[in-house]
Picture 1 (tube, helix red, strand yellow):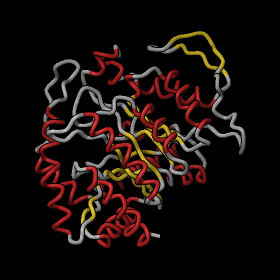
Picture 2 (picture 1 turned 90 degrees about the vertical axis):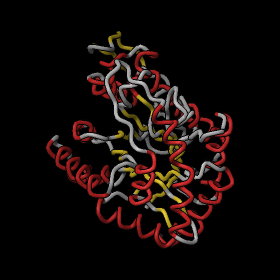
Picture 3 (picture 1 turned 180 degrees about the vertical axis):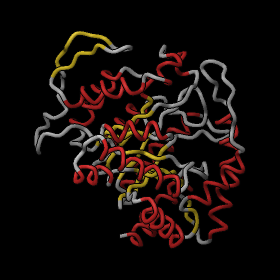
Length: 345
């Protein structure tokens, strides 16, 4: 089982962006000291829900400040980026970190980001498969050209080649796809890419997605051994809060998270004025407390073990900053490493 920290750089009410980003960096550093396996960095634009606008940039910073821990994006929003530019950045981080970087990509949402960065609604609605294929070709081939609906250019050399590391066998950087719908699950399966499943999903829905992924991967002609190998790399996102009692852990989150969720979720604006519904912050916090490892160390370990048993997923990205407080977040990460991991291993 691999357990990592999920870093949103959430800006809680009354905080500035610098405070949120400082907590994000400290969380990653503490995760390495605590013995966690990975740290996953989120990307958001124009909203206080998360104030990191470039997951790859923050990932580069964290790779430079750590020595052992894996660092991944969860996720880089592909419709807002050129696939070749993102591929070049990925190759750079893969080679300079000794293979510690994982690129997670997703469709994002129908937000105003698409207007600002020029992709428009089409980049979200229909452009993701083309962009993903071009990105994967860049990470796997020596030269790439494109003749798609959105991207067209003459063949150019891939420099630097991500498989030209100084040591070890040639290997492309690992890539995973955030999946929130059956269509995206099928796309990930066809390319035999592992999934990142969000923290709003329960074990039953995640189990349905992993089962669909396996069926689609086999139907696409991938060998059973390869399907099993990739399925072991799926990642489940969630929330973690550790305390001496379950009630204390839930109280920490229900006091802090609704205010952050309210201001963060309400700040989203759609690209084309389409109506949107916003979750009730209190109900959503309570849902997350019920779905994820929130409670005593034993309760948290049991929750993770149950998720693994039901879904088959053994990699976790856990949001530890739900208190909104730096010291409390660091203590939460420390307890995750010192008191929960030994119960799992």
